[in-house]
Image (cartoon, rainbow, N blue to C red):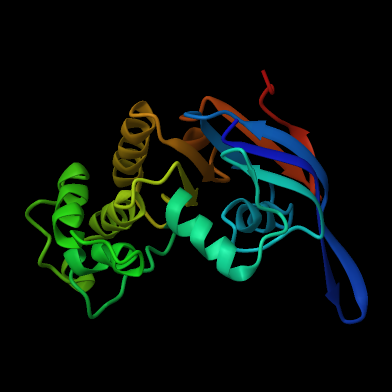
Amino acid sequence: MMIQAVDLTKTYSLNGNEVRALAGLTFGIKRGSFTALMGPSGSGKTTLMNILGCLDTPTSGEYYLNGRDVSGLSEDELSEVRNREIGFVFQSHNLLARNTALENVCLPLYYKRDRNPVEKAVAALEKVGLAGRMRHYPNQISGGESQRVAIARAIVTKPSVILADEPTGNLDTVTGAQIMDILKELNNTGVTIVIVTHEPDIAACARDIIRIRDGMLEKSPSAA
């Protein structure tokens, strides 16, 4: 299993009251799978995605990423796991406006003190079809191209898993389909893909679907 969650809970304090965002989720995501995470607004999708991405820790329960229990790691340890194992793709791209596409893709490699950041960033941009747009700034490229830069940035460190949060949410249908094609191609090379979406046609691209409602599991892929 690439991801194994065991009785995950997450509780927040809001105005003196306890709010349970996750209520004991247990599921597995196979290595090399393409999984969609679905649920209505307020279901706990974002909370779960933050835990899967090692951006947050559960209140209780266990979370194994690539065979390692990461549920109780420190902030520094979680940061190390994120840099080594996880690539993120967000709905809003999160590109730095003052940096070119190439410079944006280089950033994760700078954090890792990689010796060949430019060479690897160029290869990642070529992989998503942006060989001719590397020197362009975010305001000089389209929304679809910006999302492809974000995908290049996510894959440049060769992560084990890519977490994509509504990656087509701000795109038209045709451009969104192109982004999904890129994610499917990456999945075909063995990268585990987990995508948050509320769109059934986007979820249909996945082989497995995890549905949550009110912080509880509705349906999960088999753990075989």
